[in-house]
Length: 133
Image 1 (cartoon, one colour):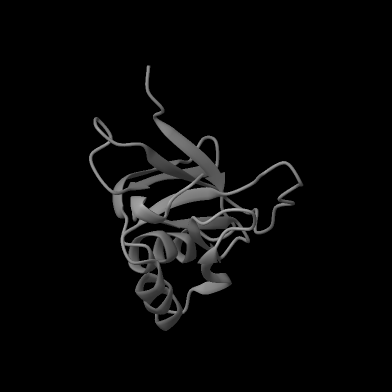
Image 2 (cartoon, helix red, strand yellow):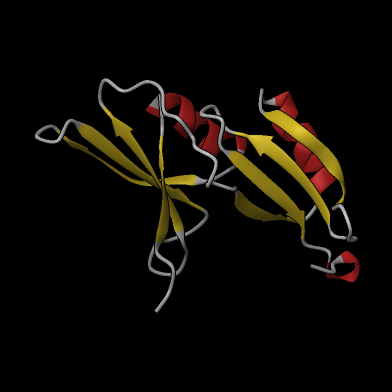
């Protein structure tokens, strides 16, 4: 078994594709409209779905706002240089909600950003010399 994808419902598909593809550097892997169900699915990720986990962005036509609830946590991405990545994200219009630094009660360097829908994305510095999750 392996994890195939995680699904997020999005308010505006183009805005979300811009965030995940243009700001975070993912690629649009596939996209399909389902007129009978009035929704569009777009799969994004960092590599081919046969070898990598994807993120499914679901746009339900006519729905422009969701209640995120209090059970959702975040998506996590491993980053080689978290400080410059946050600067690049900010320069492209992304929202950094927690500046890079050691996590509370640990030494792993993390940051948080927010997508256009309010979903949190955790950035984790991949330097294993400073990791103690």
